Amino acid sequence: MRSRGWGASGPPITLGAALRDAGLAETRARDLAIRHLADALLAELGGGDRWRIAERHARGAEVLAALRRALTGDPSPVIRGFAGIGLGQLGDPEALVPLREMLAEETGEDEGAVFLRECGAIGLAQLGAAAREAVEGEPALWAIRHALEHALGSPRPELRFQAAQSLVEVSGDAAEGPLLAALELELHPEVRRGLCEALTSVARPGPATVARLEGLLGSPGLDPATAFAAALVLTAAGAASGGEVLLAAVADAERRDRALEALAALGERAPERARAPLHRLATSWLTPGPTKVRAAYALARIWPAEGLAILERLGQSRRPSVREAVADARAALVALAGENRGTR
Image (cartoon, rainbow, N blue to C red; front, top):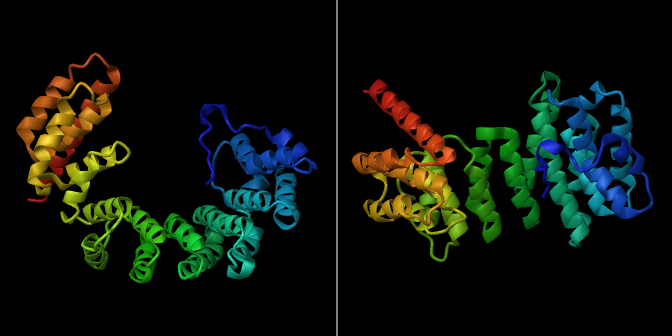
């Protein structure tokens, strides 16, 4: 929902302009100011732990005051929602209570109420990420985890969906248990997909998660996005049972690169019939250079001689980006070979 992809140029408004416009009557200008007020402050500070970070800037108190006013009093639910996210970004402990209140289930079903609930979960994730960076943030972190785990059982599907991603951002691998428990009960297709996508952030899912997702893959009518997320989780767990789903995803341009990386992770346990499509991708002049390298790397992990020969040819490319990708692929293969020798 919230994009911070402005690149090296920074946020689209300066801190001074955002503070100037935060109280304007004109909604569009006020929206832009509140939406990017925290971003502008963080850009001037240039990094560091975010718990109570506004205290490190001369105008930090002004920023917090403007965001708190917007959170509690702005007539626009969109502006209130972004104000809550901004306070979370700045690690403001006073935002904990109003952000939890934004998750309230009885606030209605109109678009504004839905948006505020989603923003509440996103803001709590931001606040939780900041709280993890400071010892004094531990009590808030516990309360945030509790609120998000409770939200996984909300009757509001949009809140359950957003709470899944927010919880894994706050709790990391410890989110696996609550996410799996929610998945066991979830019937809403989009929320089920969100839970599986959140589980892709768990480093090494356990046997219970593997069993549940293998059962999910066997269910009729499962949508491709959920199946793909489940296959990625299974691969991260060291299970090869999602291999056919990964192979099918190679034909989808949006999922292709992640599917190739997951097939490479499976190595010799990848489906036998992956050989031909991987070879085509790695050698076709229509395939983008980085994707060629990924396909060749996957081949090298599954059928070493074939994949290494293609990597050798790609290493002679006139494009520096392709040559660099080949060097990275070779380094990864060497590192994996060293790891395998060390486990014998």
